[in-house]
Length: 201
Image (cartoon, rainbow, N blue to C red; front, side, top):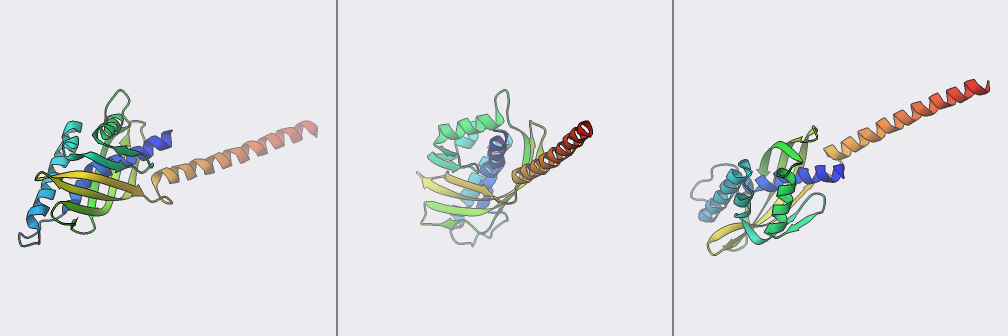
């Protein structure tokens, strides 16, 4: 259960901050479709502002009603109410999992546009976490996102985030625990063997 909670937390920052993918630097006005990209940057800024304030209503306001979020633990949130439940579980309530966090989100390329109403962005992230349990760690991840334009307004339609299955803080912690368990078991076995040998000598 603890690993599940941590992997869910590991998705939180990537999901909340990935709209930065629309751009990471100032682009000349002469860029193709600059008006669309400017609108995507505005979406990014509104989401970042809501995220920094832990304003769940503000975050949801920038999402499509049928938004789909696939988290790193393979849990899927479909629709705004499901996303709200996830965020409240992470950030609110008597026992929130995430105490504080920070992230840098990078885009691999400018948002790819499929006509005037659909865009896909992807990139990487580095997230640092301070959990309510006292554990602190850094996670490297990858993400992709789809934005759609409905009635002249760009909205976040889908998010998919992942981390390296074979090299991540949760796996490393599990390996460390396994090694410690093996060492402790070996020491106990030696002590028990020594004790029995003494009694039978």
